[in-house]
Amino acid sequence: MKEITRINHIGIRVANLEASRKFYEKLGFEFIAGPIGPEPVAIMEHPSGININFILNTNSDKSENVLMDIPVKHSGYTHMALEVTSLETVEDQLEHHGIEITDGPIVLPDGAAFIFVRDPDRNVIEFHKPGKR
Picture 1: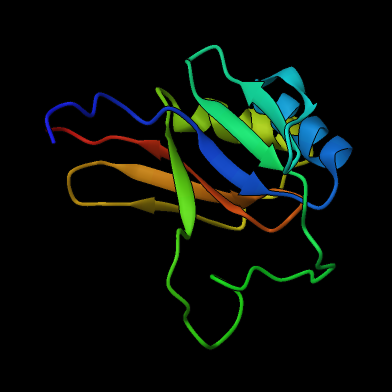
Picture 2: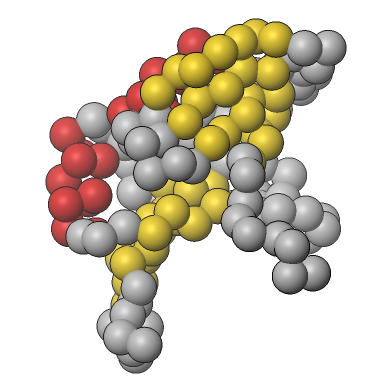
C-alpha cells in the first residue's frame, strides 16, 4: 500500500504509568495526555515525532516479557528500534540516568551498531546507529 507514510504511534501495555513516564522522560519523551479513553491510554511524544501510547489495563504482575524472556517463543512484536546519530552519546546518557544496557553493543560488517535496554515492564528498546549504505 503506497498510502502508508510512516508509523503513527507505538502502543505499549504498562503496569505503572508513573514508572513508565519517568523512564521514557529520561529518553527525551514528553508527556502529552492521559489517562484517557476506555482502555485507558496515556500519550508521550519525542521531539523527533515518535509517539507512544501507554495502554494502562495490564492485569499481570509478571516480571518477565513473554515474547523475550521465556523458552517458548510466542508470535508478536519483540522490540522497537530507535535510530540514533551517536551510539556513544546514547550510552553515556543511559549511564547518566542509571539505565542498564542489557545487550550490545553489536556491530555489523557495514558498521551498523546497536544496543538494547529494557523499560520498567521489560519491553525491549533498541538504539540503532545505521551503517554505511
